[in-house]
Image (tube, rainbow, N blue to C red):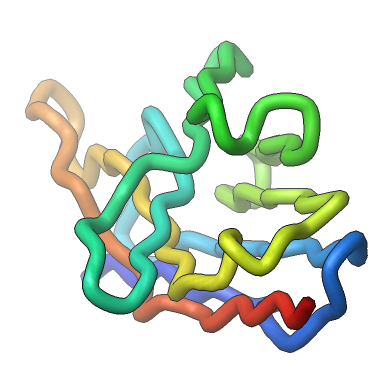
Amino acid sequence: QVQLVESGGGLVQAGGSLRLSCAASGSIFSVNVMGWYRQAPGKQRELVAYITRAFGTNYADSAKGRFTISRDNAKNTVHLQMNSLKPEDTAVYYCNANIRTVINRPGTDYWGQGTQVTVSS
């Protein structure tokens, strides 16, 4: 069994910062791409940022220049530092990771339970 557990959401005023964290645990052989998605009420889930095992990164246009994704391969954790937050960043943020549990088999996508981020104006 593999679990992704997120932490760090909350309520913040516009212009403030939050740091989200996600830890993968369980029967893990290796963790490949890790990322953050978000879903606002009435909208589809969208990619915020992802980071490869080799630390390559990709950001949604809305996150560029404000958010920074990082990871610790030894701890199987991924973080999202969010600065200059805007009300439109309000959403449930989900951690995603592609995890290989068995050697020589493809990885499987796992999701966290989500953490609420609310930015007040």
